[in-house]
Image (cartoon, rainbow over all chains, first blue to last red; front, top):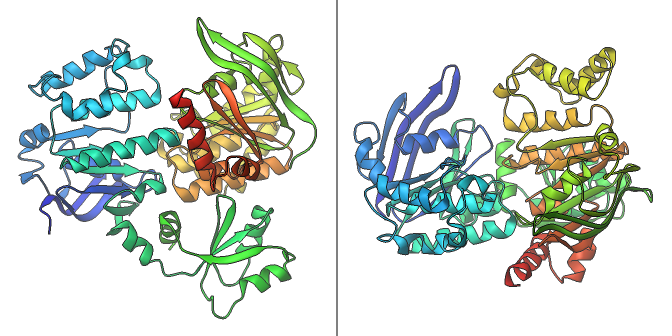
Length: 302
Length: 247
């Protein structure tokens, strides 16, 4: 068993009347990519800020790299890199100045740890004299990651690093994370993209401040306990509307060019016949294996 | 709902910023009532083109006709017949839901009684009449985006432009959002939408993929998958963007 690097026990956090996190228990192991998956407002950012020692929990304890998140915050901050969800570098400093500033804050310099950031930074280095505020979204993200890595942290916390980033850059970003993991770094990352959940070693599904489950992506998929139908049709929206009035319906939703459908009594109620009766004779129905997005949708709706 | 009537005509559109060519000879038509997906990597020129189509920026050259109005000479007329929402800017956080509706309704020239009637319809359709007096800043992003869309079509525009409307939104809300899009399309409103979610690209009637400021692919999702010998639009997109990086 790998070493536990982060441990949350009984952690809760409120803002006024709003309960952001409720009794979170979670262990994250050394060297893994751990994904926190959940909708906006689920409590992902609060969890990350607590782990990064930027917030104090109302109750419960968080241990990070062997330190207490409240008492030993100075020690923790030296060893972690944090990339917040909102771009928070200095817009009126250049790319190079931002990086040099972050390096100096941590008592190091760019040359010393260049090998760590080379993979990412070399892609924006041609623009190193440009002001950070003038960079495109993808380039800002690469600069923020470079700044979070420059002091050679043991733990990297990335809050929705790929939101608003195009599909190709997202793939490249995850390839980069994989290489950092191979160098031994532990990565805690949140994302609203379900396809990215597959690239994590383990994931936690979070909703309304509560963890719905923690497991490897493969196990999350294996625990899916519905028969999943994929329906191919030109009239997807009409099919969905019809399925929602089917007695046995659990979920009916769009999935690319298909409609995905789960039901409560697949043995007794025949969906194909139902659709036929509703006038959708010419549809192709087959059962398929779920992916993470199917699991998430069906879990969230429970 | 697609038709043969061209609602947006773009021919040889060029937009330069100094030496930089952001849009390079773009050509495409959008038909009334269709859901038109406008895809491209960050920096491919999507936002520049959308700003021109919305009458916010003038093309350097080319022919751009939006809902019968010329983007060169009649941008103010274009603004009146379109709706717009984006991920970055949608509604005012420190106004209530109803105040936002009233503000945007007023900007688009709806009368007081129209605003009252349509806002009631809107809140009932979204099943949120109890959110009427809540500050926008205090409601979840998913709701905010659904509201923003409904407000963007409150004045029954001919075309609505959606710039990454579902960024950062959970998979269930994203789908609810697309159901709203589909309803609007059925009422004849043309939908012009950008997204980074490739499954959403498959929901469009036709898609246009930009790279390096040029149109690299245009057609129905099925056609494009065939042409590029790809299983998903994600693969099509990846092939195009990769090619772009190698040149």
